[in-house]
Image (cartoon, rainbow, N blue to C red; front, side):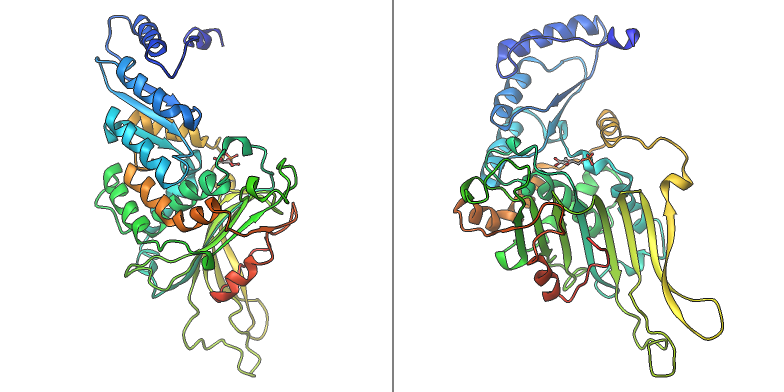
Length: 405
Ligand SMILES: O=C1O[C@H](COP(=O)(O)O)[C@@H](O)[C@H](O)[C@H]1O
């Protein structure tokens, strides 16, 4: 601990002005001595301060004797307009390749496995399209309430917190075309194409909800409410995904902690095991590929198999790769993973400016309804499955969630 603390320095000074940043620069030069050094700046600062902090940093605290990289915590703006202003200011001070917009949820094995499963397994690669996949379900469900609401002054709640980066990045990585290489820019080129192909979300494809428990807000006071639940059906208008609904369920104050992606395949055509009066079992469920992050990291494949015994009876089972059973090691923390990527200069899990813009664009109709107080926020009980109306949305697309959330 002593050795560690010797390497930690604290400086008191204004972070949003040039004077404070000059002091920081002086201190860093003292620590670095006569050697060159690279610098990583981690900005976890209020949105209102970010532009000033970034511009004074750029003017006064960058090293001339190595590279400079800047990590920025989400939310990445509060809607298209503020995000555009922020991006313009950041790009007038830094090059795009210096910016690392961090969303720690993207540092999970599950997220990296999206590409690994697809691009390194021949069994999945040819199936990854509208001909074989019926629908895709992304769940981000938390039991916790909205204790952090104070961070979101504009009141977009879960939209800026989880949907804009985490959910859309998950969908982009899952749905993208094969990148030319694993190089960050190659991956980002493919992700942004997906984001630009996602249809803007109108109110008929979205259910916003709010659970008042422990949010500190009064449900009657609509102007101060922020969505704590987002249910939506995304459509990707491109050749690979035409007609495949992407169902999104993200919320706080829900029944269970669950973070997972389920890829449901189409039914077997002309299934000879379909119940035909002859006693055989029908195919109860379709095949599914499940990537689970919470509660236990796992990759599961649901298949139909014969039940032992006389006769021909089928049931659905899960082939299960449970990470904690297979790998008896400490799981790397997602921040640890992403900070390592920044040091390495690997930016594939960090949103580029055009991705940020494309992602806000998808949400723009919903945000303007919220801005104009025209959005309906469905109330749901704390600890429940979320708003009842979400069920209608899934039914409209003929999709059932196979989980019990
Ligand atoms: O970024 C966020 O993540 C947390 C969940 O992260 P975890 O590491 O605790 O799983 C979420 O609760 C929070 O709203 C969001 O800002």
